[in-house]
Image (cartoon, helix red, strand yellow):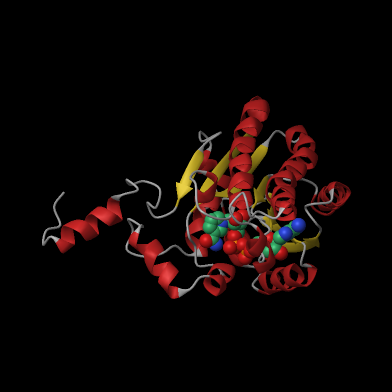
Length: 278
Ligand SMILES: NC(=O)c1ccc[n+]([C@@H]2O[C@H](COP(=O)([O-])OP(=O)(O)OC[C@H]3O[C@@H](n4cnc5c(N)ncnc54)[C@H](O)[C@@H]3O)[C@@H](O)[C@H]2O)c1
């Protein structure tokens, strides 16, 4: 039996949005655990460089560039991956469209740019559906496999902005359950993680310290999350250790969505009154 460090040996994994951030870290952890990882992204240069760097460490990594918004490109990518590696065992739908321009248009509903809504759904919900649609026949023919989807707390609860992002992540959450329901008997597991605030490059750059402080106040953990914290959970869901977890929604957020919304306000109120007791 292989050690836990090599428990994904022989498996072929696709990680979308692997050019940077959480996806890059997931690709690294899956490769460290023995998988052959295909790093996929619309940014070809980034995945080429990342796969090369993993290869130089003796890990098994390949890169492929395609746009999740383009069904023909997704279908072609699946054919190329199967041609190169013979199988697909793990799909991690990690990519999301979250540029500064996108954020500027993705506001409250009255001020929401319709193009931003369409773009969010195209990449964040339709893209994962397309990758599953085209990868599943090969996975099922080989006896099954694992689908993991990266959603967000924005897909669970309301906020003043990022309406399209939140609605697209809510769609992804239920897509995961439909996939588990439809193909579970054919050996497919589909699970979704609701990620909280994680210090990826994008999040570090786009989030002022004052905002990070507010977010940390609402965490039950003493620290904010790192890409490695997410990657370790994805690796668990990709592995046989989680073989009985199917159709699940797992928050990976340091307890951000576990407590009463009023918790921080009450802490401040009672602290001001000289007590930390409810
Ligand atoms: N970082 C956080 O705090 C946080 C919180 C909650 C959820 N998440 C989710 O985790 C995932 C990764 O987050 P991140 O912060 O690392 O993101 P990121 O923006 O750093 O990386 C996303 C990647 O997706 C790629 N991508 C975008 N559009 C694409 C397309 N059309 N086709 C192919 N690839 C495309 C980008 O090029 C980029 O490399 C996302 O799904 C995000 O919604 C992140």
